[in-house]
Image 1: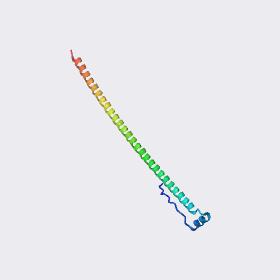
Image 2: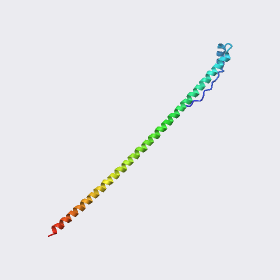
Image 3: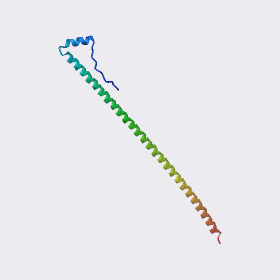
Image 4: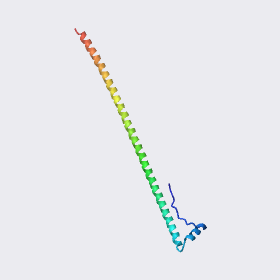
Amino acid sequence: FHAEPIQPTVDTSPAKRKRTTRGETTGGGKREAEEVAVGTALSSSASLIAQVMRESEEGQERRHKEVVRLQERRLEIEESKAEINRQGMSGLVDAINKLATSITALTSSSSTSCHNTQNHQEGAP
């Protein structure tokens, strides 16, 4: 809503002049001055209302942009956390696999070593 200031107008139609002439006595200029003053007051009030509404809309727009920025930042943080968790799980899986491989290799070499030791003991007189 963007209103232009309302400029006071003076009705100079024949009907207005007729109404004014009937209602006037000697203070006719005073009444017209009052009408102009009222029109000016209405115009400045309308301008003030338009300005306040414009400032309010601008403030709402700034707040909306800030909310959108904060939501985007929160999404980035959540994505970063998810990536860190994925990497952590991947590292954990790798460590478990290496441990399993080491255990398997150890049991295989231990089993072979025990088997060789038994063969040597059986063959001794």
